[in-house]
Length: 324
Ligand SMILES: C[S@@+](CC[C@H](N)C(=O)[O-])C[C@H]1O[C@@H](n2cnc3c(N)ncnc32)[C@H](O)[C@@H]1O
Ligand code: SF4
Ligand code: SF4
Image (cartoon, rainbow, N blue to C red; front, side, top):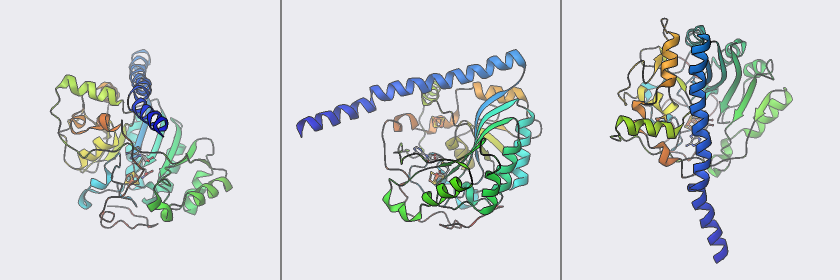
């Protein structure tokens, strides 16, 4: 028993210390090198080669996770949105006009399968030759519709259904349709990724930290967020933020974010240089409201639900919504 406890405490301290530092060191350098690569390629070719983009196609969700990395459950009913296909196409066209290629797009939310235009959104994304890989990220509480399956089966090499496996959370088991989704994907030759249920990093509530520019840069670099994310903004346009949480802060009117530095808009007059400058920035105001780096050292059961029911107007099952 004493030996077991000693091993456990050694493992825990390694995980929170040495192992955390080693894995973090790799992420830090991957992040740093990807930024450098974009700059070098821009200088050499005059083109933007983007590596990654997450797209919040709706802020609506079937779950209300206490530690949601995008702070989605914190968005009030009157701040919610769901992108229509026409809006989505407009945003994506504006971005693609300005870049040479985009390695990976992750279509998510909220829960993307709640968007009634999601089949058209996915199909349009997959048609874009500049986009190399597409992931559809779902919490597996909503079944894939026939229309969605029909689109997905057309692109077995380019598209992956990425199931967030929350089965370690027993309270959710009756709502998870993981088996059914995997089965329908396999039957239709759709690539599906369903990892073993994994633990989450807890997410501390938003709180202002009075960090100097130097400290804030250091914090962002250490966070090494690769999750550049597109949100719709309250003026009806869309913008790209350094992470999902930063986009949610903007929707909530928190963070004092400045256009051109903290985000770039996908409006008609977007310039390549803005995209480059955004990706080279490492002093994001949103980071001053975030404790992510310290949170990363701990782990919790995935998708623990907040006590209140899901945000008003959001059904807990398969309904699809648009135009909010
Ligand atoms: C914000 S969710 C949006 C898509 C969908 N609602 C879902 O849950 O899969 C995107 C991804 O972030 C992951 N995620 C959310 N909160 C997290 C946390 N605190 N720690 C680690 N991963 C988290 C989810 O598991 C999911 O794979
Ligand atoms: S399922 Fe949970 S993690 Fe995914 S968006 Fe909804 S609240 Fe966030
Ligand atoms: S707000 Fe900044 S520190 Fe927090 S997760 Fe986003 S990029 Fe990282």
